[in-house]
Image 1 (cartoon, rainbow, N blue to C red):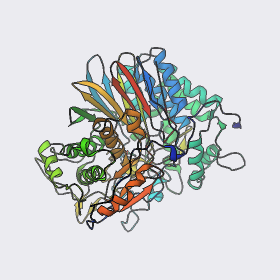
Image 2 (cartoon, rainbow, N blue to C red; image 1 turned 45 degrees about the vertical axis):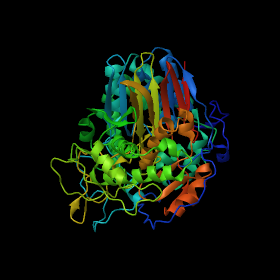
Image 3 (cartoon, helix red, strand yellow; image 1 turned 135 degrees about the horizontal axis):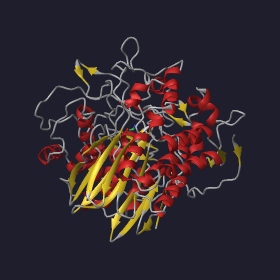
Image 4 (spheres, rainbow, N blue to C red; image 1 turned 135 degrees about the vertical axis):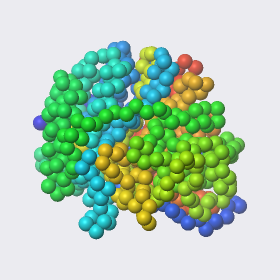
Length: 599
Ligand code: GLY
């Protein structure tokens, strides 16, 4: 049952984009010569998760514990867990299950996640890979038509075909068994209660439903959930109940993750995926039964006097962020300053070089070999020597990092679009969770089961398996995990946690995280300002500048340099916590609905 009522939950007050933090002073055009740069961008012509109006959030300072995430209901529920003495992992379980209800377009039980976990007592950082896997019956041709041509993106996304084996429930359960303090059922209770009583549809969710209404109305269960009885997209302020989700959480509370991977929830999910008549998927109960969380060592890269640590393959996040920072380390960005187009040309070209390596080499290393030298200081110095301040690179190609057994690979042509959510939690003992969680595209595959949306993570694989006769590292293979850009990060200083951060945003995640780190570490911005500052992102040649912000002032100088420039929404969702002088300073991205709470 659904009914409309007055909002119960306050979303951060909204202000127009023009009020956004102003980063750039007026920029001179002088002395910048056109270089005849060839734009190389290959991706992202399709609308991402809908943008919502910008709302200025403030940093929140705490002493004992803190939680920063993308939705006020989720943050409030996680805060209560921490207040009750729960661990960071306990709070993560609660935050994730509430996000799956109140921010269903971005992450949930039907998706996957990467989590960094810092164990305060052991002073140890580890990472957990809860990434979806390709069904064992899948072949590299899954996203090709009968002539071997790649499918159109949304023909691949919408339906059962794109659904990988979800990992989020097992990630929550496995880590709760190791690091949890409070009872599992108690942790699921806030989301269950909210699903039964109803939650208020936020402005962002309402906007996303309206934008996606054609695709959301394709399958009856999804349509029934996201539309009113008279067929209208759910409006902002609507109180939405989710009986199926409450039942799913009830089963999980009683039977644990078994109910998902060996029981009723999984059986129903598989039936749904296989039963989609216009675009069925290959997922089986066996895929669920054989799913495993992988604990992997963190990938760390030095930057200035810090170590920037994150998630290694199958994510390209830490390696690509680490390469960008390792390349810009050769330049004095501090002196150049945040409002200098040369700074952004250096960062932009460093990013293009790193993305070229990412496209060639980075994928699930349990399936494909990868060069060992991607983060070697000497290699990154060589890459930095390619960059000439003031003159963008004409062409960008993958480099030749050290590799003990090199194989010839073709560059990747996979298309990633942003949805996703990032959360940071610190508990009273100082344990830290930095987790990026996703169902891939906004609303994932648009297939619902058990009150939650199923992912379309398999479209993060390259649709083509070979190019010019050479294999693509991120080709689809049975059981393999698609390459991700998610970059949950923990910056260490002198062996101690300094800053936990991450963002949604598809392959732009990498630029959002890298430039927030540069803004804070080089330009001395507060964490909130580093998160709020206007975005300038370059992955494949085109410079994306955040519309409606002072980043637009750099359009002319970057064009004069020779870049192709696109002014557009840049829809990050950075959340972070800084550890400073015994305080926990949390910050939330003003572009989304997130908040920070802590004591
Ligand atoms: N699906 C978004 C990512 O994994 O990067």
